Length: 205
Image (tube, rainbow, N blue to C red):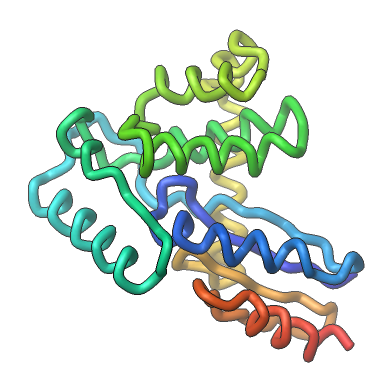
C-alpha cells in the first residue's frame, strides 16, 4: 500500500499555518493511500523560562507566517498571559495519549492544542492545560492524566521521533510519499493543496 507520512509538532507554528491546506489535501487524497501521522518532537522537556532571544525569534516567526500565509492569525496575548517554555514534548505526548481513546482524537487533540496556543493564549507546555483540553474534547480526564505521564507514552513518542529522523523528516511540517518503490519528498504548499496532490498522483499512477 502507498503511504503518505506526515511529520508534525502540535506546537509548530508552521504546522498550524499548514492546517487548512493539509485538510484539503487529505480530503482529496486517493483512498488507497494510507496516511501515517508522526510526531517529530520540536523541543524537549524543559521547566526553564523561554529566553528573551527565543521569544523574539518565535514572535517574529508568527509575523512572518501571517505575512506569507493569508488567513493565519496569532493571539499575541500569549506572551503576556503565559510563562512560555521551549518545551513541546508534553503536547506531543498529549496527542499520543488522546489517540489511545480513539484514532480520531489524534487530529482532534492536535487542533485543540493549536487553538489553545495560537488563538486562546493558553500554554500547552503545561500539563494542566493539556488535561483541560482533554476534558473539553470529552475524553476520560483521569485516564488521560495517567497515560500522559506513563513510560509507554514517552516510548511511543521516542519511536515516532526516531522514525521521522530515519525518513529524513527533520523539519516540520514534513510530507513523504512511499509508493513501495521509492520515497518522494512532497514540498508543503501552504496556499494551494492541488500542487501537492498533483505531485502525489504522479507517483501513484
